[in-house]
Length: 188
Image: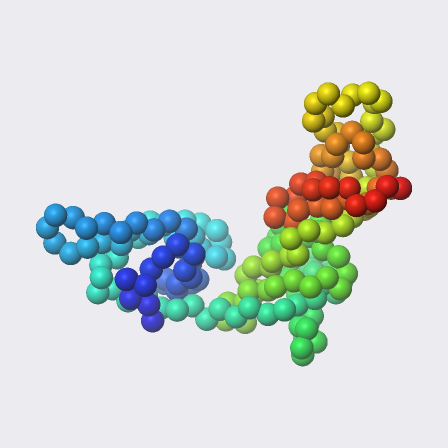
């Protein structure tokens, strides 16, 4: 159990049986009466947000959250299979839940999976991954005056913007948090 005085940005609480993360927090002490804790909460399952105000005597439940080290194994239809690093138990995650992150999965890569009541609600991938550019237009020689970008595709069809000097076959580093090009690792 959390009391209202424990609230802070980033804390995860349970409201109405679902896990919520505090995204904004404000302590307010009016001239008269008790102090108030104003919070903006984001649902960790659906992504919806709500505003709530708590008094110092209010209590909030702790959600049943567990973080596990998992390895991405393989894709099976619209699901992606992850296996536990210790027990080798498999867990299926839908493509919808992964969203854009499904393009950054590499077999046997280590991930962190956040579980609520034993069900996956969030997957944290490695910050950077390396992928080979499979298709891009050749860059125009001498066009280096500004940071000009062009489209490029990686092996699974995901399209990123890369500098002109990147060619087909180059190995590039991609930031999984933003989905953007970070740097070239090696030339083809």
